[in-house]
Structures are given as structure tokens and as C-alpha cells.
Length: 431
Image (tube, rainbow, N blue to C red; front, side, top):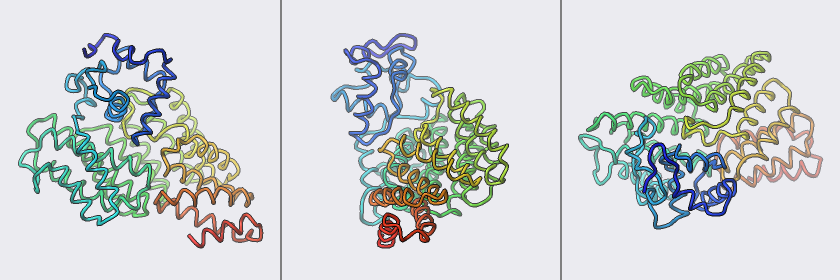
């Protein structure tokens, strides 16, 4: 029997058995890795489920729970039907079959023609039709939402370079569906949110693969979608990525203004972690302007908001943002200010803290560490970290990481007589 809005989920509590909440959370995280999902499950989350606060899990947790308890439905686990859970975030999601999810995953991972892969995804989004339906329904909205999740999952594992071109087709399809209109206002709201998030995700793939003009266009498209639909969460997300892009393009003042605009959009959302990320984006802009005082003030706000912990209002896309990402973004601030030894300490913590599931981020943080060490006068340590990055690049394709490690190699050339540095430079040249 599904839990009522105010009653504890006794069914889920019985399934936990003799395990403590922390032990059971560890089992959930392990099960997630088995199926390629990423969830930040802890004892607090289990407590929220058992108290009835979480009446229906998001789709990542749903897949994990159904993997842990095969043959059971969400109702069998004590959860309420998704359509019965009120609230904007619940209304934006709808059932999506494992078969459809597998089609999307195979399409992205296919080593053959990008055109074929993109067409497969596009057809999945459209169901059996080869053109958008006259009116989009819940299944089309769910397909757009699932495309966003799959892009993020594959980017975490493999980086952006191999995905960007393949991901533009479902984005075009999503906006074609949006243009066709929906049979219900709730479905149209989901399509706006899904298409906007897909634009941000595709923009990120362009951003990470060095296609900055394309990224700027996609982020602007997402921001326009947010403004049209009055979606403050999507607006904050778009501004966060725009601030990041402006920093990478050498436009620090634009980065500060975009981060501040994101903060204004996020104020009503009730997510301290989102405010923390936006403060870090702002800090990066201030560092680029060489304004140390403003940078430190923004970093202090970021830490204060982060310490407030996770919230049920945290957006689904923020699954990447934990202590490791906070350390990495702070590291970039100190590096921009020229304090490379301090930057290296934060980058090392970021690499050590990062879940190995996020292979792209592990490679990124380690590349940041290598560069900081090279500039801090520790060439042998930098070469060691650079070697780790080269190991990771066998499975990660990211122009950003490749550019960073190339810059580190150039910085280490004066130290090539060191055996460790020489070995790294030889290996990098061969790669």
C-alpha cells in the first residue's frame, strides 16, 4: 500500500531490515553504481523516505530501488503514485520505460555514425512517428526529460567531445515538440522545462568541447525558454552556465553579472546548494577581475550556503555539486589570483573527494592539480598528476581537460631532465 502524504513509509522501513540507515544508504549507492546511476544517498535521505517526507523518489532513485528489489513496483516499496504527488517538480516528470531508456543509451554510445545515433534518439523522442505529433503528450515530455538525464550520465562518464553532435538532434526535436504545442498545460510546462534543460545540457557539451560560440547560443536559448515559461529554476541554471562560460572566455565582468542574475532568480527556490554554486561562479568572476576582496566575500557566502546542507528543493541537475566541486571551483579562484600552492591544495582535495563514477570530473580535477603544481614549482608532483590524467583520458573525451594537460606539459618543458617529468612529456607527446 502506498504511503499517504503524512504517514511514515513502513513498507520501506521493513525492507531496510536490520541495516542501519547509513548502512542501507551505502547499499543504495553500491546498487546505483551497478547500473550506472549516480545518487548521493545518505542516512538523512533514508530517514526522509521512511518518514513519508519523500512520497515518490526521482527517476534516478526509482531505477536504483527497482534494481535492488526486482519484480516490485514503487507502490510495492510504499511510495505514492507519481501523478498523485503534488508540486511543480513532480508534475514535470512522468513514467519512462526502461526499454526507451536503453534505446537512448545505446544511441549515444554507438561507435558508428553520429547521424544514425541522432536519428535513433530523435525517433525515440517522437515515438513511432517520423515527424512531431500535432499535439505533444506526456510520453513525448517524458522522452525529452529522459534525454536530459542520459546526456548528463554519459557526459559524467565519457566527457563531451563524442556526445555533442549526437545531442543536437534530440534538442531540435524537443523544440519541434514545443512548437507543436501540448494537449494539456501541465504537459506544455514539462516540455518547456525539459527543452530548456536539454538546451543547457547540449550547451554544456559544446562548452566542454571548446565550441564556445555554440555553447553561448544554446545557453541563450535555455534562458529565453525560462523567461517565456516563468521557470526560475531553469533561469538560474542557464545563468550559472553562462557565468561559467564567460569566465572561460575571458569575460570576468560578464561572469560576475550572470552569476548575480542567477542568484536573484534562485532566491525563491529554497536551495542553499544552488546559491552556493552561484556564489562560486561569482567568485570566479571576481578573481578574473583581480578583485581579491570581492572574491573572498563570494567564497565565504558559498561556504555558508553549502554548510546548510542538501534540500528537497535542490535541482536534479546539481547531482554533480558536492564538496569535490566546491573545492575545485575554489581552487580555480586561487589559481586565477596567482596563488598556485594554495590552489593546488584545494585541487588535491577535489580529486581525492570525487566519486570515481564521475570520471570526467576526476580527470578535470587532477588536470587542475597538475597545472597548479607545475606553476607552484613542484614539477615532479605535477608530472605524476599529469600521468594520472593521461590514464583517465583513455575513457574520457574532453577538449577542456586535453587543453589543460597540454598547457601543463608546456610549463614542464624546462624541467624535462627530471626522469619523472621526461617520462610524462614523452608519454604526452605520444598521446
